Length: 325
Ligand code: SF4
Image 1: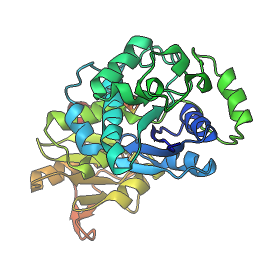
Image 2: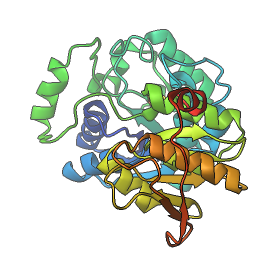
Image 3: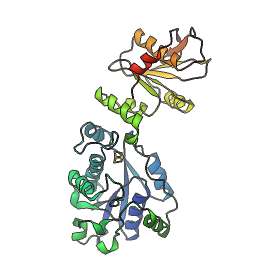
Image 4: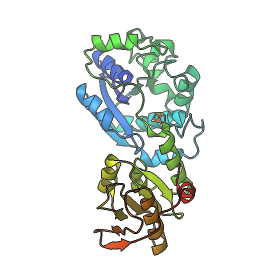
């Protein structure tokens, strides 16, 4: 008998681990794939897969996701999270990978009724329809409660071997994890920055300026952001962790620091930068370093801090006017 193979749309959470392990237990070859973008990076899923002995494939879908994000057919959740369109894109992309991976169908860890918005029956159906591969998706944890898709109708998968989990409770999943010897799984939620208020506002603002440069998107994860011109932003660290991250990410930007007075660092980045923008950026950095005397010069430069500028601190109204989010 043919050894049927499946691609798993893998999030790294318990339900996706269970769906992969369950299908493996039934004898299927499963390729777990994590679809990544700067606002849902792969690190947590990679850790989760490693801890569970799964060979994870990471597939970057940033360009396609950024195309969909400004105008999702099914709109957004509470923030900038277009969950139905996003899920559909993951499935559609997995569908395109079937041939190259010589796989037959797609699985996912969705559980009927677990999340009020995205896992209602109508939402699951909308995702499947929008993905264009509706008939090739199997949800091993809930499939007995759903309409049979092609792998079931064709007998590639026996419906009686699949499960009927539904609802928000987690006790059946916990018991199944124990049965399958799953020792590690992360707490639910928290993996997608599109559900974060501040990040969502910063990303939306960037896309409103038609900026999709991956470096600029990467920078959105850290610091306070200020729009100084249609192309140029100034970013100021909020704590040591963010100062370190901004310093590490800094490339092709102008770096600002007050090395003798502990406090934030900043970078000016994005486009044409003139002396007015440098003065404005320096005045913002001074605003956030209350310990430095008002006439203290700020050091700045591209590769080395070989320039100095003394400026008046920006006032709170200016900060409010320029700050994004
Ligand atoms: S929470 Fe984020 S990653 Fe998950 S479906 Fe929604 S938009 Fe996509």
